[in-house]
Length: 112
Image: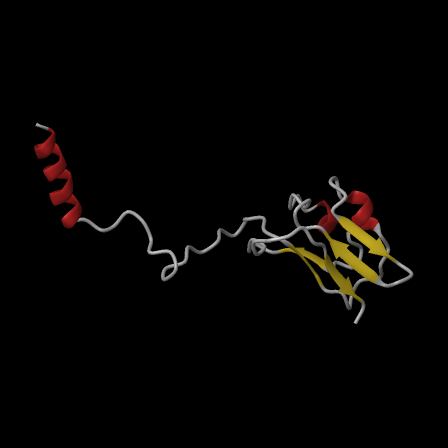
């Protein structure tokens, strides 16, 4: 009896569209409101440190004297509080996910 139910499934699958995407070739577009990674336009940044103070996970560090801004992507929860609090609007929340990491490292953005 189980052979016939399996054969029915196989025959129906032959005449339907696939229910999945062929991932490397067909990439699913991100939704408009997807929270991905925090991006910075370092040229606009005044290194005030408000984003560092508002970050609930302490993922952002701002060094005013060295003109350096760094983020720990593994600690960032993409809440967007830093983006909302930035007075110069140099931070943005992209809808692309960050790349996979093989080691724990912070991204450092020196002043250009």
